[in-house]
Length: 224
Image 1 (cartoon, one colour):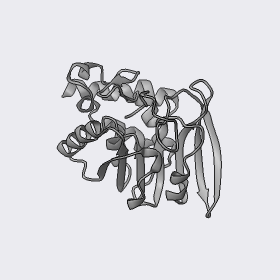
Image 2: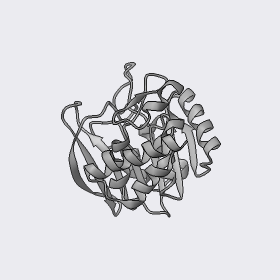
Image 3: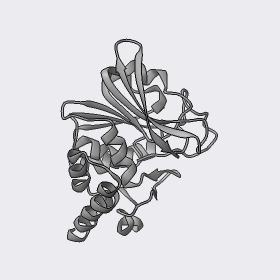
Image 4: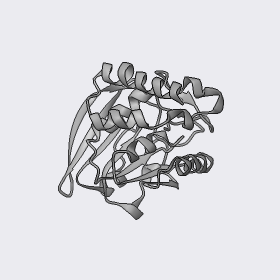
């Protein structure tokens, strides 16, 4: 356990702080969450390396920096309700649960959702509610959300996410038609129809699959 704690501290120092992550709440959350619990047994020693790792159903757990960058951009507070699109391993949802009051995490693969639910329950994350469904439709049952985050790219922001975003809510997602023409966008809602968009820089993500994203042609999408 001490070895993993040292690896976690090194990850925060060398991968996050060194790249400009400054939100102390995000950094502290990344220090607390045991990433090794969310990867395959054979990948535990690689859990804190600076790259994604494979999980089931052809998906991946995001590299730590991407998780931290997305959550920092969302400007989260302890009172927020967050929609996490693409549960994957459940790691990003666990980190988010250290920062907000409630996390709704949606995953299109039922097997991944169940595995993530089991890990989150075992580690003591009752603030995370994992549901199965098309993430591009959001989850209206618990809307509105103060923040929505996604780690897969679509050509446009899905309208259901806009509809489910609270006033002054922040939406973070990569937007672009191709993998090499994407930008990480923060869209902040102001009033009924107005979204103020900020370009946070060039990124490269896999496609957001669903009714309001990219059609499912048996292509994997990025999960956390």
